[in-house]
Length: 494
Length: 117
Image (cartoon, rainbow over all chains, first blue to last red; front, side, top):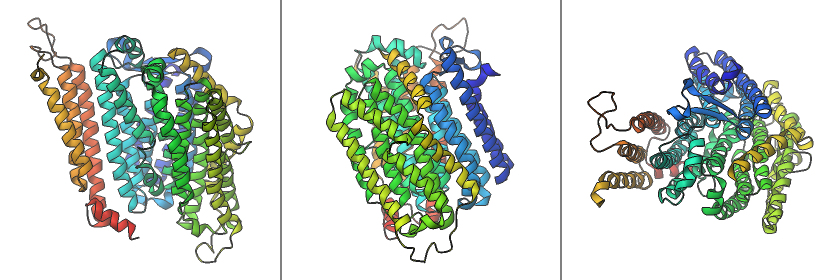
């Protein structure tokens, strides 16, 4: 049983998904979803302990080893860290979904909602555990296709358009990834990441390899919505059901970033990616533009969900910025922010889901004076908002601290200044919400008879809010996970 | 090595560009899916061409044959075709629902309707 943990990590949600579709009853399906997402979390925790005590796990699927052309599942310190992030958010969002989805999705579609949700979870986990390039593509498409379906379940008809747009962009990205994988396969005859890592350096003078590198990088950047490939994201996040936004915003883009790290460090090797291809010089300006422009756009949004979607794009910029610095501090900052941003954005989007539950709207104008009526919901929003800004004693502070240190180490003080400046911009857009919610008088029209959100929504929201504070005060677990992941990646690379 | 020996790959590039162009230039949502399909199909041909060996047969063990085409690209593309079918099905069903919700499948008309909200 314990030896099969890597495959169980994927199989549990993957098998639970058709079960949900078969039972057709929303509540039963929800029960299955909660049980399997908690089981996934437990498995991830077990794997975390195994990886940190005995090193990376390698699992041959069906007993066929990689040298025989089999698919290898491989989990190292970075993989187990991302598994923890994804399963944690999954385990918190599924209980939340009962009330939130119950209100926002038609009763007849609820069981199918959980089926798609679990497929998405299985896909995301599969991307992380697999050590096979083509498997990455397959799982990426499992998670993306189910994400398109989930987004299309939003009540607003614009959700359909957002989902369609995401489908087109996402499929182009995925096809780019297949082209890249195909080129690597043609050149090396292998799809296994560890094998590719050995075979590729000998071929680095070959012209096909840079083309494969470019296709893969652009394809994955489309999936993770790096500026200027981000057009699909704001609408998708805004119009999706609240639980979906909370889940996808904190996991899907993070897993795509994981794929990027895998490509740069494990498959191509950091020397090739950063020294020969000069990746840093492309990613640095793009991430800076993403951080600055998206923070600026976020300030002018009237819909709070859309505002947070733009803020997510800026946060993705921070993570890519850390990667582009190509130093261990920068990488630690990125991987830490991967976790911290997942917790913070999960908390914020779930708090907005509570507002959506009561008001049926997340327009700023409708939220006037809401602080008095929904003190717990808005309290969680405030904690998440502080985290987003990077106030000390919240998780966001830790990752920004590392990021600024990383920038200063490289002598890039303008970058450090920009990080501080954009944090101030986060203060502006969070303050806009705080001002409306706490310091404006309720006009007595829209939300006059509104009360606190139900307890089933508040507990998951506050779980993430408390984690956001906890990992801001005691960051030993997260920094340990992140720094050992970095040590592992950099160790392979050099 | 003449340009003709890469004939397959020339077709792959042409199909890829045609598909990509349709995908970008067309405002009709169904035509966009058609473009996406052509785009994906070109990649299927890219894989299959790479697996072909001149004079090779199907990969069946038999004493009569020693040269056979690499079966792995075929298997991979079988998976990719399934993914492509699923994508088209999902995309088209979204188009159906967009048609129900908006009454049109022209992108600019839908954009206009959303802006006038």
